[in-house]
Amino acid sequence: MLYSLLAGGKRVRPVLTLATARAIGLDPERVVPAAAAVELVHTYSLIHDDLPAMDDDDTRRGRPTLHRARGEDVAILAGDGLFAEAIRLLCERQHGEPERVLAALAELSGATGVDGMVGGQYLDVIGAASRPEAPLELRELHARKTGRLISASVAIPLHLGGVSEVDRIPYERFADELGVLFQIVDDILDVTGSDRELGKPQGSDERHGKLTYVSRFGLEGARELAARSHAQALAALDGADGRTEDLRLIADFIHTRQR
Image 1 (cartoon, rainbow, N blue to C red):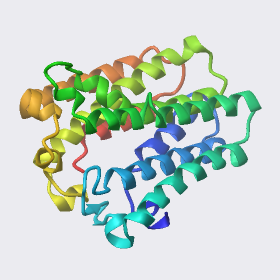
Image 2 (spheres, rainbow, N blue to C red; image 1 turned 180 degrees about the horizontal axis):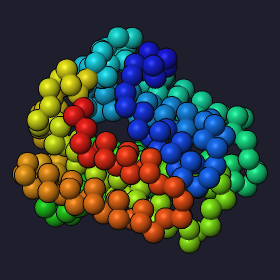
Image 3 (tube, helix red, strand yellow; image 1 turned 135 degrees about the horizontal axis):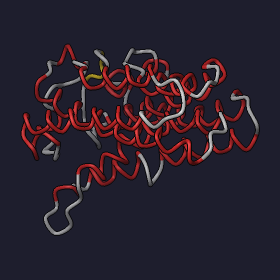
């Protein structure tokens, strides 16, 4: 578990959790357990995504994937263990009113399951987005596979801070658009980046015949979509009540990242 968890990475999701807490006037240190739980879930998803039955990748975060280093059996167990530890971490270490912690827990679980990451990965595995008889827009697929956990990274501190449903709306719109932006940029980098920059094999999506924003809209079209999503994410924050400077910087980083 530690082999993959401490291998590096951008830590975008936990940073989003801390930045959102700061935006709504909540001490970021109070949500560290929740932020760590989000990263545990994200790392678990990467371990399982890399398995031969899924994306069959040999490197991740600049080093051999866990199943290459320790075996498929250990990789499966490590992923399962990370998810379980994430739930335990939220339950045992996250302070706050019980109903707020429970709402945060439900948010994380929902982002992981059928309506989130696992459901999106299933649609990707069966090629649902490319079936002519049942077309599924890329945005819907990736809203589950990638976007849902990013959205949860923002929603969790909103729950812990007791932010009202009305006041959550601008943050939720920002998070939804940020998830789209992240995936578009990821698809672009899969074509334009190098193995060293990405920390994983370049061109993996193309080799697996996956439908991406680049394969559907072309490289320039994908870049235009990324610019549009970036602008819409920032615009969503215009209606937010709070100090959103850090969230805007994160959106800028995701838009311009090179790995």
